[in-house]
Image (cartoon, rainbow, N blue to C red):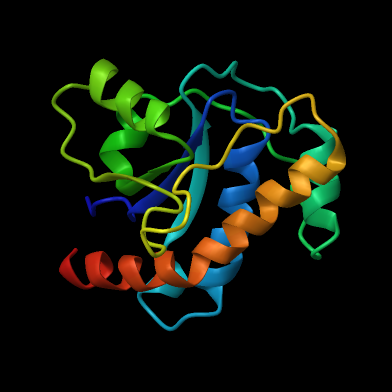
Length: 162
């Protein structure tokens, strides 16, 4: 039996705002790359998510504005199975990274922040827009888009090792 393909997991709190947007944006960017990046799957999960919730309306609207659709997204909580399949986990804030290391103390999967590979002068965290205006979601989306080129370069280095 062959090993399942590796995935990248985007992680936020409830898996209805930031991580679904990050998942779709990163998957879109990787699809434009050559192999093996093109074949890496991107999923998302939450540290405190309920399973089977839909995405927030403003997350859907923020991505529709850039031609991407997350309207069919279904939330899920991060678990050991997801972690085992993951080549990389990308949190939105240090709290997400801390939660993963707290609840899964023996984790071997690298855990980084989505914006961690930008220059040090840039804020590495993506604040939660939950319950805020569409403008906050657009700022969140744009901060992810800004991070994607540096993130793709990092993914190239780990994909070559796997």
